[in-house]
Image 1: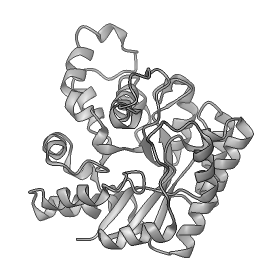
Image 2: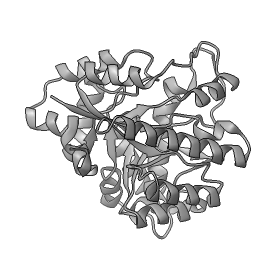
Image 3: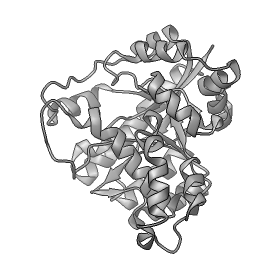
Image 4: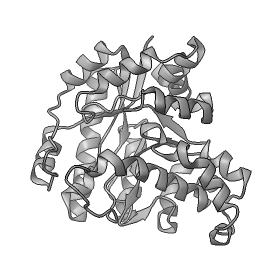
Length: 316
């Protein structure tokens, strides 16, 4: 059965060089990537189309504001060229500068939707130590809501997470928590309900969100209810907003993840994802686990491409 991959990264040479010059944790390798490598994996895993995105740490790796803006623009132009060269095989989520650079982020949103015509936007789980529900980011959400944008949220290193041991780099454990934290922040701040036209995708099956969702709802509605804002949802509204996200299956095809996610999330909210090439070569094993998981053909078709076609109608 054909698939649409909504979690597929591109590492152009200029970005690879930036990664190489950054402080990469010992033991972490920078994946070698090429358009041909993406196409080879796609053909092998029956992926008809991939929606490309820039992985963590994103354009912010460039440092100062001017360079960050330049990297975001260069990546978007590169992805747009790929889409044109291999027509029908690729779309892309546009990269943005840091949301703390509101002027730059808003300008890149305008460029992305009006010039290269991106399929959506990539956001990271936090910027400047603030999660995505922060009031400072409201103008960004307002602009994305006005455009009915699809937003793909990818985890990024948390500045608050301490270095504990070299055996636990942040992508291993912290990234799933970061996805849950920013999603919870979007919901409890009222931002998710405030901007309902944004279709928001969480990476990696929502991280730990499905697992902790009932705890989140129960405690936010009782002993921590006094912390909520006037616009925050309450009770069953929190559950509704948590389930209004979309969830990609990148590195999440195992039965223990699927058992939880498929019982909790609406069936029309689940999307296929590979996390190529940052999955370290395990894309095929997780894809095989997903292929072997017991689900009916209707649900499988939704997860593989049906739900993505509803988000990206022109991908059919």
